[in-house]
Image 1 (cartoon, rainbow, N blue to C red):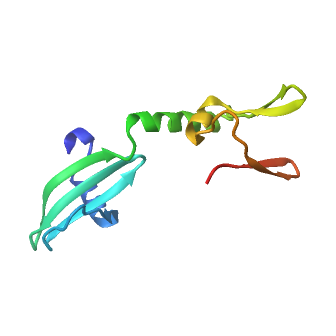
Image 2: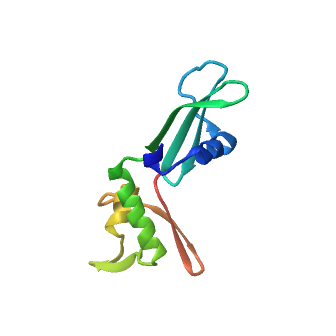
Length: 130
């Protein structure tokens, strides 16, 4: 628990504010609660001994593996810095939208795909795949 930078006050917060995350049935006096902090989930498993709780497990896991989360973090950084832009190009007599590689990766956009879009005053909305 200490190597996660957590202490017993954090366990108390998980027990009070966390959600039940039991992966399997446990004895009635065993509580398994989790709380999400960013992409990390902290889990505390305690036994209710009547006058006190006995901590039997504390763990941390990530909702995403490292390969999945890095493009999302990069995309959010670009979006926050207003560096995520679609540019208009020309292909023959047609106008085309150039989409950043990171958006192609996250939305799984492939060459030649067609999308529906709505035109509104001062705005173009592109409908992505369902």
